[in-house]
Length: 188
Image (cartoon, rainbow, N blue to C red; front, top):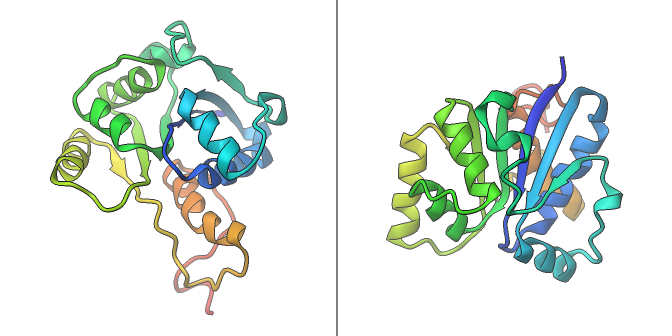
């Protein structure tokens, strides 16, 4: 049975993580149904950081931010998990406050209320007290805060390998059996 996941791409810097995640999900295409919602600023940042963005480059279903008829806007569609990658502090704050003013925050609200897995790949530094409290609130509600902090145990040699240390963790948390560095199994 295919996994059903939602990918939200918010408007903070860190489009390279979204690109890495979508590339890995593309490789899993037969095993996963992916619904994507991007903020307007996400596309702006993608084009600043990576280059021209085209939905046609990806074999996934894209939904507009105001499309509350998207399947994952309701718990009855049984999407198993959601990641917001990258997750801006504004989106984090709206999720923490239960403000479902667009499809991304509505989907996150649905995932939390259904007790499914919500992963927020936060991308901001430094953090204010408000950011930390919002992270605490989402964590207490069952969400997972996964800061975009790469690891270096595997001795990554390219920027893409560095990004993958973060996106592999996302995929692990979503329950995908991926090949990646495993502490204690891969001696470096």
